[in-house]
Length: 318
Image (cartoon, rainbow, N blue to C red; front, side, top):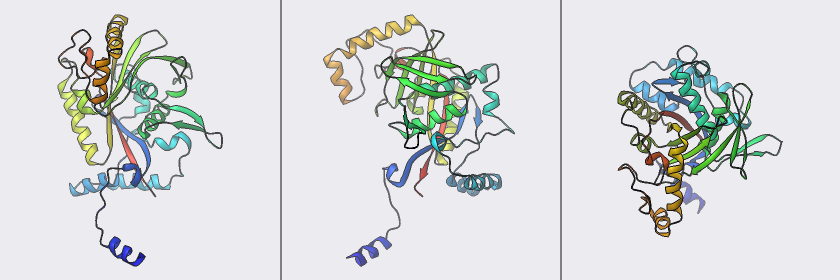
């Protein structure tokens, strides 16, 4: 019987699977990001190197970088979820995030989004080390990356709906999570409304580029969006998984108006049933803008988003 099985296995040329966790260690690493037209990070993949060789590009530096990574000792704790190599010759994220002006502000918004917009819990491992407990490996990667860039997730108070982070200056910040709109497959995004320490409200969103880009404000720079989408396509060809982060400031008036309509829809039995079967368009509330497909603050109001895509890699089982 076993001999016959071996003969059958020897004839297999390809294996197709939609269960990535079966073929990988179910571990993701943050490798690079693209913020307002600027690429940060030098990481690549074997597929990326092979693709560039087919295009006739010089991959000597990329191969040297990958070989150097193999010589490094295994990363432990939260560091295993972030494999970011800063490009100090061209654009250094660690330097630019400290700068004044638009780019520094966008980078800080991006990293704060990663540090706050998630459902991660901190736990203690068998040896007393900090463990990031998450329902999705990409959230572990984003929280670990935020810590590397200066915004460390320090804990969550579920009873009070608060997240504690430590900023680059070492100061403790307590951020109140006012609303959480969880990720579901048909929405393809997760959004939160957070109240920062200064009392201001901020919408933070992350999701697929297809749903984020269609919700852009009309005044958004189309050329920058095109550059971003081209970059996402190139990263996809290199076997990176990509996600787009977005956000904007909210006034108290905007939030209160939306919250009343949202809570009313949640209490309506008809609307609850709609949420169970597919895209949710409320009918029991004030009419919404034409772009609305879900009861989500990201589609109720016209926003000018900060487009901040990031790339992750799936690690194969060794």
